[in-house]
Image (tube, rainbow, N blue to C red; front, side, top):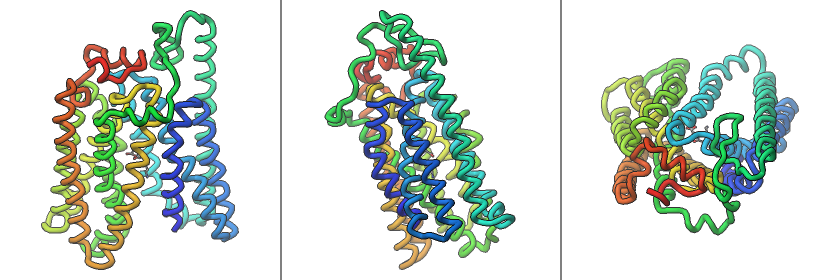
Length: 397
Ligand SMILES: C[C@H](NC(=O)[C@@H](N)CCCCN)C(=O)O
């Protein structure tokens, strides 16, 4: 129930959060949504201490609104500040830090709660959210400094894509108008394809992580510690290797090809886990590598197929499609596991991974017809120049 409230509020709010970020700016997004996180967690922690179930749910709901949109805001800031040749690296670094949080939670939360109390553990998490608020404040100050530079010379327009702290002059009309809601209708086919690939791929990962520990204990004789260490390998690999993958993708492109390979490996790994005697350690290694590759590739596709002024809205739509689909798969996996067993659950994951392979292949063909914006590289810097003009990479390509 607590997870459902979180994921439902997360899903509902990200449908609109990115649009608000595009309209009102990153500083507004950062401050507002980090405040939601802090307030939500404070209510949740206080309610846990007082065992007030209603307020626990309200706290989780507010937290869900904040966290989903904060992730969108982070990715929008990255898209605005990093050009083609460093975009995937920047996304990789953000993913790495997100996964640091998951790994700390995975390996230490229950130990901290056991050594102290659940109440202490949740207050510790709340304190960390206030600590991260400080970084949002630093970000706000940096942005205000940039705005001041912009006012110093009104004949210059300040590109959202510039060296940190240094405005880069672009042609006066470059920044263009702000997004309107109806602009969503003009989003390209590639954007919707990337959204669906993201949803399909992540549906083979997050719901699997949610049940893997139980599976390894119930079916493969792992102890609780062994099972959670093995499952944690997926996030550990992503935490360490996402930036390196990002750097590689910036150099070679091939985002869709890498996603295709990763989805195929994920499909085989799910079959291997349940239908062959291969060790679960091998399987989590394969799934961890595939996840690292796809996460670094697919998120960096979004800024390449929409205009810069639409990037928050676009990222938030992809997140909404992803989270909505994952919620459905979580429910389906729960029912299938209850009614039949793990082999059938594995077939659910295989079918989704297969659909991802098919859709990625279709997208490769579509992208090839449009000058390989997603599978190519930005060696000439043309995509980056277009970003500055408010065009999509494809408008010019
Ligand atoms: C970068 C990517 N982020 C997401 O998928 C977010 N929409 C949701 C993260 C929720 C993690 N429990 C990722 O984390 O790979």
